Length: 280
Ligand code: R5P
Image (cartoon, rainbow, N blue to C red):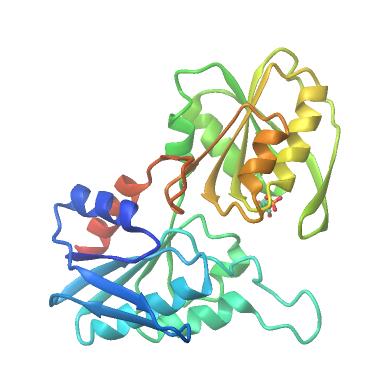
């Protein structure tokens, strides 16, 4: 299987090609003065996997252009971070279901899609077939030699955090979160035992950073010695990283589903392993 490095995932794509010992089919990308996008493959392939996270509208269009360029080849699409998944239902009458619209577009070209920690089961239900990889084991393993407590910022993420904590071999607990609007959340202080401990907040996405900032305040008030955060997808909208470090958090790290300066954990081996299984 050949690998195509989409413009949003070149580092992860390269790591996957190395893990699989696969050839990379080079590609070029450009943006015209009017904003239209262009992609060209510089080689042929009979069987290829495109590695391309969808963090922006341009990322989605580049993915469609690469799929089209592959013509008759057997195509696998790896979308490590699948944006638009949070609009997985109608929250208000008349809304479009974003992830359903995008699922239809991509599945028009391929029915083999691989992703990492898709936002929800509801988002998943809009695909005919999607393979989901859980990054929690690899995240948990990162902490296995440290004495930490893992905290979920809300009840909804607790199942995920349990898996990370199992791999870190540590205790876990959760906080209670209420979302006020897109960038504000309220975390209710809750009796959890973090006094004098090193705490790691585990979440799937850090977007505005609001959730982690509020959780950090509560945990420090409860006496935590050190508070760090780890997430799968470092969306980091609106200067989130600057806000996080200004809020007094001790460290923030993420996987490389979105390539950021804090992407210290790779999911390349997990994706390569799944690709190998799918190709059997
Ligand atoms: C919520 O359902 C997710 O698990 C994250 O907690 C959320 O997306 C984080 O968003 P923000 O960083 O904007 O608080």
